[in-house]
Amino acid sequence: MRTVDGVLGHLPGVSEVQLSVAAQSLRLHLDETQTSRAALEAELSRLGHPVTLQGAQGSDEPAWHTTPKGRLLLLSVSAAMLAVAVSWVYPRAADLAFSAAALLAAFPLARSAWAAARRGQPFTINTLVTIAVVGAVTIGEAAEGTAVVALFAVGEWLEGYAAGRARQGIRALAALTPRTAQLLEGGSVREVSADLLQPGQQIRVGTGARVPADGVIVAGASSLDDSPVTGESVPVHKGEGQEVYAGSINGEGVLDVQVSRPAGDNTVARIIRLVEEAQSSRAPTARFIDRFSAWYTPLILLAGVLTATLPPLLTGAEWLPWIYKGLALLLIGCPCALVLSVPAAMTSALSAGARRACWCAAGRCLKPWRACGQWPLIRRAR
Image (tube, rainbow, N blue to C red; front, side, top):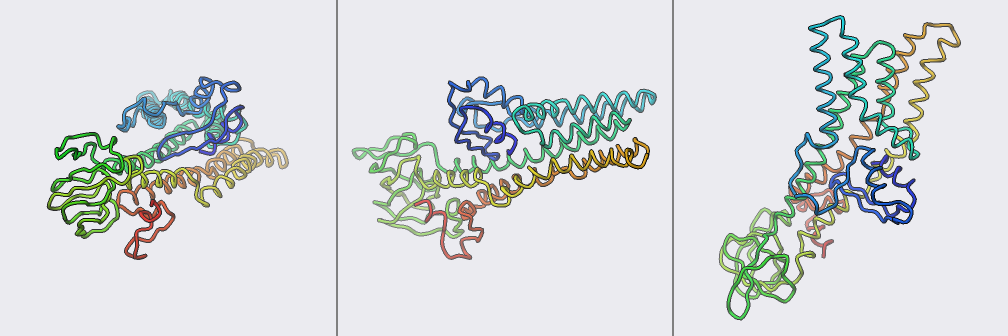
């Protein structure tokens, strides 16, 4: 995330950047007189983030092997397995096989690192891994370099998988509201799209059906299961004059409901917006990790260089062992775990709260509703 933000910040005409890892969405203001849309999309593609306009693709999650992180995982693991097979069949060609596998798997990382460096972000995770792999091949430890890329690709893919689970939670929220509604007009009922409902219209909700819009009961009484929206596990009996939420399940009886809010502003829609805002905004821990890695990454790179060069230069020690130690320090000190785990942990926590109807999480309140005696996000959404 910090790499994309940093690169976009150096492009002329780009402002108001809002990046959401969980939703895989990017919103920004672009002055095309300074930077064209094609140039922006090409820059993001070089960073390993191909662009698709919202609405231009389906709502289904793409197959994992079609994503950049999935392709990197397939490339690195396949190259490593092929190199292992060659080393078994032709032991003399093992070094060449592992060298080719390491460099081939590291090529996408090197390309992303170069694109980031050209835009003022020279110290990224991709840079550290690329240097370590090239160094490992140079000193004859290509097998370890191949393993490094494969393990890094697995970590990247797991981070993408966590973000995908978070997006599934958002889609599950959207699925709470039915797509159609029974509209009452002139004593007759006709089926219409729930997105077309407007305040003041009356709808009929049958037994076992989900409420398609926020509204107030004008006729009938029933027990409603509000657990998908409020987390309340016990059905609530409601009658005339009481409010119902979009996504609630009508237990028994037939209800006539007067719509109070349009589809884009109902309870579920507001919850989705709050969750997305919480995911796109950075928690204090995430902001600290970004600042920390901005200083820590170049320091680790410097420490690795000094470890590899100072002992041979000052004491006459052999170069090869100290270069190996410098590369080892580079890999051990790489802040991958921090930089990758914090966004994944934040998005996974919000997604888990969404799936469990713990809407308090989007409002930064981590207490379940029973602990605080109220429904913070419902109150906040109003």
